[in-house]
Structures are given as structure tokens and as C-alpha cells.
Length: 103
Length: 149
Image (cartoon, rainbow over all chains, first blue to last red; front, side):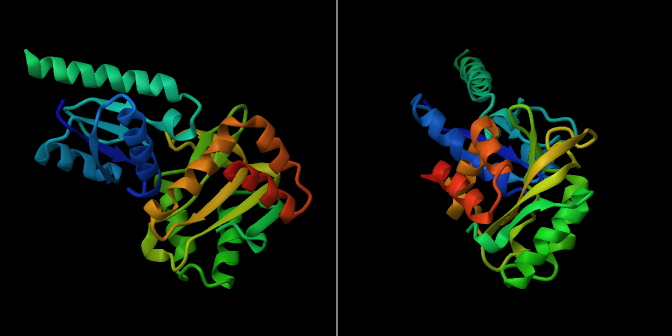
């Protein structure tokens, strides 16, 4: 399976987004899914999505603009309170992306 | 990163700004942040607030980017009465925060494990009550560090 390319977003583009990225890498590695992540601020998302090759976005703070790829709220994952629900959503998005590519 | 001198018990602060200024002052006194740090944290907090929901309570983790930080540190404040912070996931919504962790992070990758453990308090009601009920800085550090172990 190919490596997925993910944008993680928080207000400063560093702390929360890095935590989410690292947790997600670990969680998906257990499923045999490898990802690369880029941490950005909300205002950088639109430009990154338009110019880069990203599969989906995970955000802890609202993202402005019309984003053409899936955007998944990662607050419950950051806090650990809704970790399983979040990962379930991520797995669904990933399988949809890979299915679309296979067809 | 969390030192006794960075712990404030039962702060009388009445607002997010007051508690951020109070904790920033500790960082400045110990020269782990630049003078630009408090204003940068406050500005960020206005645009991208940092309250996070825990189990039945809210915790705020104000911070800013590393250009204002000299050395990493975490300051902790419990409050006499909760203060209002905006929610990270929905900045328009104000919530009552009972515990504040002010973060000065020089390199987030370097401190991921610690930050992750800090997040652990959000899903651990028992630990939170232990921290909120602490009557000394050492007690708070013990409670938090038991979680880090």
C-alpha cells in the first residue's frame, strides 16, 4: 500500500499538530499503514492542498476556505477522549481514498 | 520541564489574560522565554484559543511558536475560580477552565512524550482531582509525574 500524505493543523502550526501527527503515525503503523505528515497553521491549509499532493487533513482548530480533500476533526484524538471514534473515521477515509484509486 | 517554581496554586486570576501574564512572568523571571513571549501567547490565544475538553472539565494549554522561547518549560496554575477561555475546536465558544498549562516549547518533537502525557490528564478524572486538590507545588508535580512514569 502506498504512503499517505497528511496535513495536520493547529493554531501555531507546531505543538498540537505535531502531537496529532506523531500519535497518528503510531496508531496507523499498527494497522500497517504508513503516512507522512506536514504540520501547518490554519491559514496555510488552502495553499498546501492546492499545490501539494495531500490525501486528507486532520485539524484541531477550524480551517478557513473550501478544502477539496477530507477534513477530519482531531481534537478528540489529541485529548484521548475520542481516540477510537477518530481512528475509525480516519480508517474509513483512507479506505475510500484507496478504493477510488483502485477503480 | 515542570519545576516547582513554575507552579501557581489557587491563582486569583479573573481572566485568561491574567493567568497567562501571571505564568509568563515566572518564565521571564527564570529567563526561559523572551520578553516578546506573553504578548505572542495572548495574541495567539485571541485568534486560536486553546481550551480543551476533559471529562467534565476544561483545561487550557496556551502557547506560542518557538521563536519566543529560549528553553522549554511548562507552568501550571490551579484557579480560585475558573476563568473563561475559547475552545480550540470552536473559538467562538467560551468555556470555564479549571486548570492551565502554559507551554514554552523550544522544539515540539523533542518533548512529544511529555506533551502526550500532559494530555493524559484530560481523560483521567482521578488525576485531575488530585492536581486540583494539591496544596503544594510538590504535590502537583508528584501527581503529574506519576502520570509521566
